[in-house]
Image 1 (cartoon, rainbow, N blue to C red):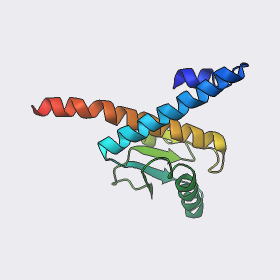
Image 2: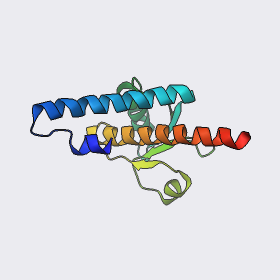
Image 3: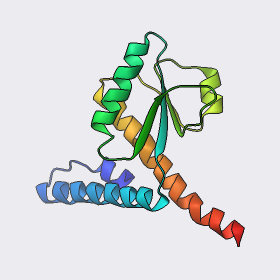
Image 4: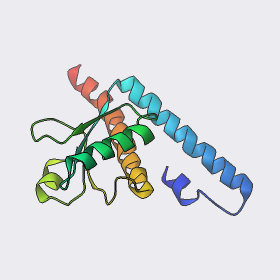
Length: 139
């Protein structure tokens, strides 16, 4: 994936086409891995200014990334477990208690959506690589 991102738009149109196909194939592999794991990615959203903006952020992520990945998007709750925590402010407590934590600048910003998608892909990859290890510990 890093290779595809670094050379996503080379000058040669043929290379550009190959890199786009590589990224599509990588995304397909991650989706298959998620289906095999049969797990939804739990994303908690915290917005310090207004609960309406939290709902707007959740709806935006459902519309943009919910079609590609199986996501459970909820409002942040201290007691609920989640894979990824999204917030509009940096909070030291959030950073230490969440393994995947992202501070977004604007819920409608395309850059933030891309970064959140990278986190989702990382969570899927980590869950997929951890699952066989858990099975080996049981035998």
